[in-house]
Image 1: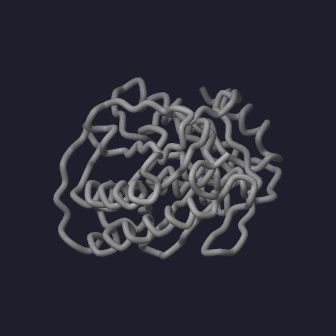
Image 2: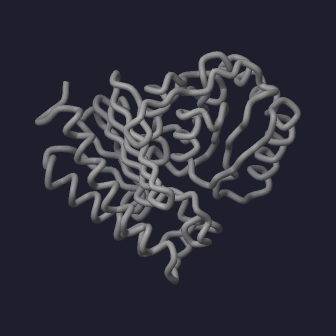
Length: 270
């Protein structure tokens, strides 16, 4: 299944790339940031670009035949194509707004898809030195120790994660806040950490029971976390209840016990 190398080898190289990029993020975290607006509230820094270049070079050097989709490259050209080829999908700094503000929820996300299926995932938070990893069929880990999703089966005892996203037109903001207003009556509380990749990993290790996001940037936000959630015993799906599609900019994640109740709650909150 894996071309020119084992999945373990792919993971080891991705971890190495994530750790090196994490070093750049950690150094830059306490320094003055040079910020450019990508959109109304979407930011990009020199660190994003430096990390993406580093990761691209590191992966290309080891796996020259693999394809590469990076957030900054894709954002610059406005296009990407996901094929069945082994493809590295990278968000060099997920949580750029947090990074700019010195808010400590920032990570590097690296995912490998083979046949469009997320197969290897690495999410590294360099600020608190947490490394989440997963390989299809081989389990999910936090700093080398196995992780599992929460076993909670009641929505009312569940912690929900989501993000407001970067779009600020009236319709989007109203739909977003209406959804949150409705869900707040059904869950214990709400968290927005500012990083989709970390939200997914926090579901995987049981810090959050529920997570959904509608209208995020692209597959680089979810490619790493998707494998980690699945391997921790969690389920990924479209917030409507249909199959999860890595290119759809829509994701929901939870444990298997809460899936049906969460889908129902999401539908009623529309």
